[in-house]
Amino acid sequence: MVDVGKVEQLRDEVIGIRPIYSEAGNATDIILKDGRVVRDRRVLNSVVKALTASYAVDLKAQRRNLREKLGRKGVLPFYLGEGRVFVPLKMRQALTDGDSVYGYIDMSYMGQPQAGTGRECLIPLANGLELQVLSAQSTILGIQNTGQAALSALQPYKGDGDAREEQVVEAARILAVTLAEILEQLTRIEQSLK
Image: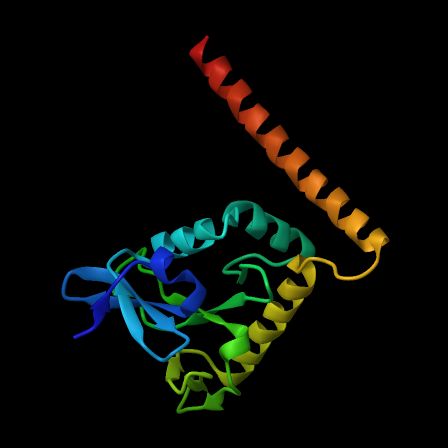
């Protein structure tokens, strides 16, 4: 029997989230630092949104920023602060269209991926669990590299005042872009109501 909980209540202990098929349908397993696995009955996307919202992270803005800085599209890592980068890993085959196949693991808890048979790997986690992933070892190493690039792009600057000033300017730029998008959307809504 798996314990049931919500990711927001466990947020500081979470090192991974994995989509699963349960008797009630799509759900998400939350992997914790101490090796326990707790089931959140919501689908993976809802769990990711709840986890990032609990840290006041605007996931949409962060992903837009990462796409721009990394020049990548598709499934991207997300950053929760304090060096916590969760990288996407393919964890199951979809049974129907729209099923989440990617879960996320905090990079700092991942060991060296061990090649399995074909296109799958085992990833040892720092809490003693092993995670089966449906990707080749080279793909996982590339994902870890992308995670490091995301960490470099999103982690707050440490050091002198010039770096802090640059960080404030970047934050202001992101805020200005977001506000401009909101204004544009409001203008379109206003035009459609006329």
